[in-house]
Amino acid sequence: MSQKIRVTVWNEFRHEKSNATVKSIYPDGMHAAIAARLNMEKDITARLAALDDPEHGLAKEVLDQTDVLMWWGHCAHDEVKDEIVDRVQARILEGMGLIVLHSGHYSKIFRRMMGTTCLLRWREAHEKERVWAVDPTHPIAAGVGPFIELANQEMYGEHFDIPAPDELVFISWFEGGEVFRSGCCFRRGLGRIFYFSPGHEVYPIYHNPEIQKVLVNSVRWTRFQGNESVKPFYGAMCKPLEKIEEKNYHAEPIRHPGK
Ligand code: ZN
Image (cartoon, rainbow, N blue to C red; front, side, top):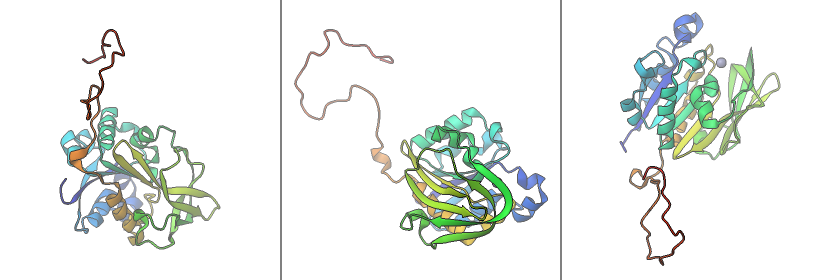
């Protein structure tokens, strides 16, 4: 394991090119803004990847050198190639962290990892959001107050069709009355996943210091926490640790596929 946590910040990177408001907030893309903030941390090194890069910027060598992948997508989820989704999923199962932001709730990779539709209710009405830390002792909420207040946000509301999160860190309240599970932790295989909903592209959400704090914390939480040298292995015919009595369960040995 390298000393620094190697983060790849993946962005669809389309709205910043086509929408003047988004471009004015994130001239180099929201992934660049997020990575610049992450790179201020001594224990983190972040790089960029985008949908229109070759292999979506997620070549095998890149993923092999990624401890945590951050994902923002919205209007082009369907353009993400299934073979890349397969590759990302395989890395998560072997221990890579995944942080899914905002409209990434409907990305192929998040739906693949959840196994549900990941649909929700939404509304664009420039309304106030309060992101409540419902697990204030969780490492992802460290240094954040009882809530983060965002003056303008897109409303995301329940029901959010996800499996029950393994750990729930934030619940948001919106001016219009809805609530939403906005910070959810999941474990899949050896990997850790964090979904964080704030981040609509026409608001400067990723310039907000408290939101940035959550992103930094979530990088540290989603990175592989175990010991690389003791990752489990799978397969049949393990040598017994103790001497076991010979038993004749089968008159003839059963042949398994692949042997
Ligand atoms: Zn949005």
